[in-house]
Amino acid sequence: MVIKVKKRFLLYGITICLGIILAFIFYYKIDDSLASVIDNRSVTVFQLGVFKNIENAKEFISNNHIGYLFYDGEYYRVYAGITIDNIKLNEEYLESLNLNYYEKKLSVNKEFYNLVKEYDSLTKSTNKLSLTNQDLIESYLESTN
Image (cartoon, rainbow, N blue to C red; front, top):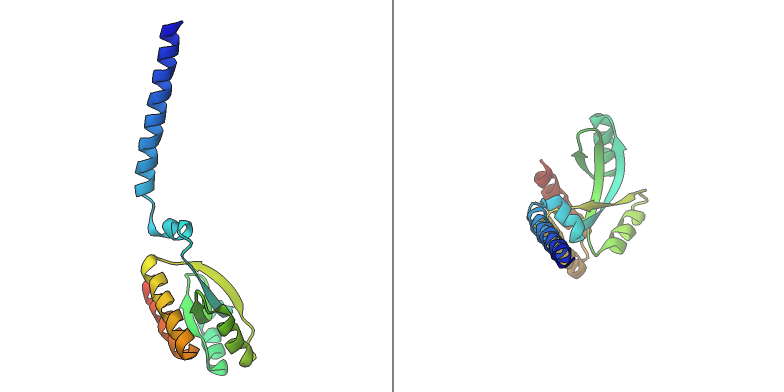
């Protein structure tokens, strides 16, 4: 009877140790995209439109004098801004231009998240969205290609 209990505890101990070892292996193999979800590294983008045809997207940008083109492999998306903390400021800016927009959350890598955080603090101090958004969107487009 005592031997059966010792075998069970030994089996439980080995199982727990194996579980801990596997957890460490999987934890260190998590890539940056999953880490961004776990760390809640997401930004809000302001999407103005989605197009199948690049010419329609370019025409939209030309007619509205705002927007940056992003191709995701299937659609051409037109973004107007990226932020973490200045959502209200971006909304007010786009509404003042009478533009319809869609707010979308994107998970991003740590470097880009930190860049957006810096631009957000700059935007709060200067209240100039167009220049900071242009730089951010161009950085985002470069980081995805």
